[in-house]
Length: 318
Image (cartoon, rainbow, N blue to C red; front, side, top):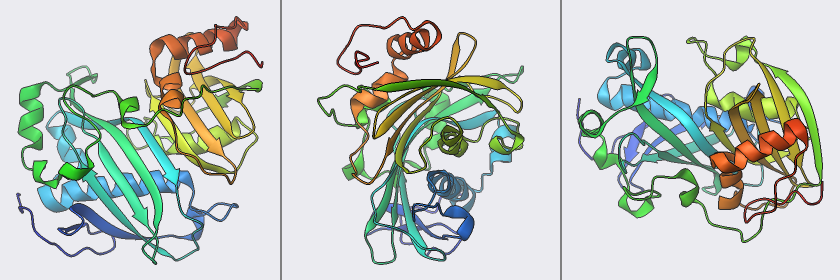
């Protein structure tokens, strides 16, 4: 089903397309279970809204469900994302307008930028989701699709991409390149170690981690309840009853999380807390996505062997 590029009306659970904004768009209603004690929509719900409009768009415009993709031995996997609250607050039963645009820089990367707007038109949330189009092998394993398979799948979606809002290119596929440098390393002043047992509620019907849950999992590992921005990197999914050792490095307004099983890092996350807003930076993302960085941070968590300071982090205050 190829509807072409044209204005299409939207409704709850029904994406449309705005030619003016060059975006797939859909309203969502904020319910009580979506809100947090700090007067905002939970980060988990904002990530879920972004996932919902993507899934519904594939169904609405292309006639494809996630089950249909599985029958085609394909899957769209979320590996990295950033979600940031930019607005002042959001009440129960308020309607947010979700706008989203995909881009197709090269196989297998399949990123979607997503923004949420309050009823008065102000920007409430902005997010970027680094998805990958993967093929499913006979043994159930996943691998990134090659160029031919990727181009065939996205051919009917390329017109959704907004050329004025591109974050990636064929020569710049790393997620951190979409974010600006702050010019400062992450300097933690405290640390802790804890355990997290993956719950059935953290996973979907395929028994793998639902990406939105990571933002809430961090609350069980760090004594802050006022996150307004978070970067998440899911390197290897986890399943119900998996026990994760979590190493947390933090300061007054930030925290870095290493979720590991034995010597394998499974998930990394970086959160911003408090009322003074600042954007997620390239340095913070690199702490959680560069193998040389997160392996050193895991080693420090396990042995207290402190790595030397670098451009992206400095553990000298610990």
